[in-house]
Every structure is written in C-alpha cells, then in structure tokens.
Image (cartoon, rainbow, N blue to C red):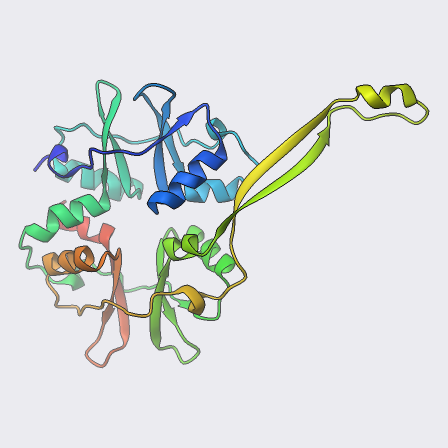
Length: 277
C-alpha cells in the first residue's frame, strides 16, 4: 500500500501570518494535538504547530514564532511502510504529505491503524508490541499536573489507578481540552517610561495594548474527566483485532490485562505500526 491509499486528503490548517489564537481555536475544534501551518493564500508548508508547543510558550502570540519548521514529510507515492518507519523514528503522530512542495494531504497514525492494519488480518499477539512498563497516573492528580506528565512522558494518554492501585480509567489530552476554556488576558505595556518632573511627556509616551489567549485548565482532578468505560485486551489479542477495537471505539490506546484483571501493559496505536516495519 502507498501513502495516498490511506492519507487524509481534506486537510485543515492555519496560515502565517497568524496568531496563537488561530491555532488554539482550530486545535480545539478538530480535537487534534498538531496541525499544519502554510503560507497565507498558498498550500506551501511552513511547518507544524503543536498543542504542547503552545503550552511551552504561553507568552508568545505570533504564530510564526510557534511553528516547528523541522518537519518530516512524505509523498503520496511513498510506501506505507516508509511512512510508518518515519513516525516511529521521530515519535510523531502525523506527517504532512507533499507533492511539488505543496501540501496535498496528511497521514496520521490513526489513518494507518484504521484503514490498513485493521484490514490486514495480522494474527501476531498484542504481547509482541505492548509496553510492559506503563506510566500510570493517580485519579486524584490535578489536570494541570496530568498535562505536564503527558508532555514529559510523550504519552497522550495514561491509564488511571485509584489509591488501591486498581485500574479505574484512562485519560488523554483530548479529555482535558474538552473541559478547558480559552482565557483572554489584556495588559498595557509602556515602551518608554516617564522620568520624575517630565510632566510634558505624559501624553506622548507610547503604550501597547497586548491581548493574549491561552488555554485555561480548570482546577479539576483526573477522576472528574477520565474515561471510565475501558476497552481492554489481553496479551493474546491479535494485532488486527486491537486495531479494529481502536477504530470501533475511537480510542488511541488499550490497557492490557492479565487473566485476573490486573494491568500488565499498554498498547498505543503508534505501537501497532511496528507490525508494518
């Protein structure tokens, strides 16, 4: 299979020049963690902007300063295996698809898992690709701390355990996005200050009115917003069946349980790409 066989052709993007608010609004609208950035009025790719990048630079309002320009891309005729290999090697979930340096689509982990792996009848067990060392989070953790842990661990979703160590849910950054609001802050910045006694300069000093929009995470706990209806698998669940479950239930990770219901691992959708490479 080739990239063009599974890629998403209807791409949503933001343009430069543009603002942080433009990117944040679109990220929330389509429930994504990254989107392409193009030059205004063209399909020429500038780079990608990520939700994590917006959080890391909360005081930057110009979109051009928030764009990651060191972006790996693929072409429509590239093999699907090559796209999967690039995603695994660079730990990214989406690659822009370029033809003659123009953005013609985007291919995501979800595209490959849902449209390819789910249909391939791969019988290898989930144990071959599960992560036995799981980063779990306590259900009493604040959402702000949970978001920070996700960023540090490079995991979009984390299993949730209670004070007894039992698996009680799963939370990802989209859960946090849904309950967060866009906060607008305004302040006045004086370019030149007035020295004492210089009353005549008061009316002429320059002032800049700065408006900043940022995502305001509420003071809630993980257990308040986590997904409690879990889709779980066992070590023996076939890879293609795992992909089908992810597609059916619209999830990106599935906890792996032992015979007695204990959490023993996690399979993320990106882990399934290893079945191709």
